Length: 485
Image 1 (cartoon, rainbow, N blue to C red):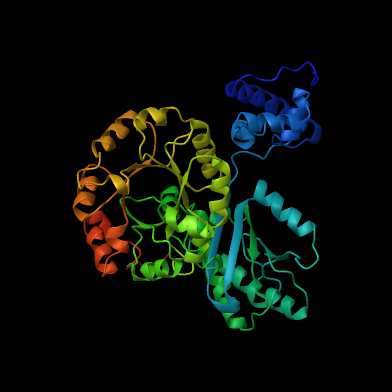
Image 2 (image 1 turned 135 degrees about the horizontal axis):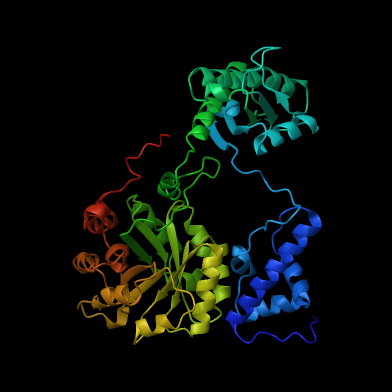
């Protein structure tokens, strides 16, 4: 098949179909050739189609298709004669971080059968040495290894004898003693000690100096990692519960997600950076709060204002109210570069613009919101979209405010029309505590408040008026939470 006689697909669906078929053929061909499982690539798939990869790239752009998403279902195939990982063997993974300072210990380990994947990794590690990362058997003392036999692999490059002494001394002894104690305490089954092996990756900081702490922390971390491996820790429920609450110690701040409505979104519309920072500093801490970089603020300072506001709001979820009407992808990219967690487009934008806007936001992992201000039939407009937004904003403009209820019947209409979609509904436009309460009672997930807070003489009190509206909003998990594992 050549590019000259290959017919260009006419629809997005046709392109997805031929991509999937070609990717499967590419995987089969590469697996047979290399003797290993393979994954599809743009270049390889284009070759199967008999076209240049640049041609395929142009089709992907034209039909707005993400190659990786389309071929994600094309897994590495079972190929005759290709050695696949053995089935039915124990293969457990454990991880633990314990301690503080330079002596802190971080353990990653594998535990499983000698004649399975873990055993193969154990033998390969012992047989293939690497300069500065030489694996060694863990021993309680010279000539006394624990069971299961354990291979200790240094994570940090060993550059001198001082580094080597810390690995071959307290770290090695700690790991070995933890293994032996885990067997004695029943963490590792005694009937498996001759069938299993352990591969243990150990971190020892070059500046660590207290050998007792090195031993103490590595012993505790190894024991904890073993317990977690045997318990198949963490459960999916644990991962889902903690993933958006957690703060990585090396990152230094939380990356919030909108996992637990309702929320109070505060629209920062005053086009004055310093005054806006002062407003933020008076807002009480709560994981129920979203900050919105309003359109006037962005028009004056550009999206870089978000990065500047991060100086006083490091952990807070930021929406950028771009009111995008054109070049959807470009505007998302600009806001993303300035650390926006979500972006807002105008529902009046052409469908093609909104499709590009939503697609790009989802590709980058941030929230896509569509503001239905002045959209005559929001449900009809939403049905024209290829991808569905994460947030729909029911909005009455400032110039139209009359103090009346703001179309709250649309909340349930949206829920009914898009029962199969997962999305949040925000209500905006002259919101005060009374209208916010009504919106929340009728099913809103987010209430967007502007002047009631930003022009208040007592900003903290004004915010707390909203945070007291429902039992859920009064419940702030992060204020009293102490991190324990």
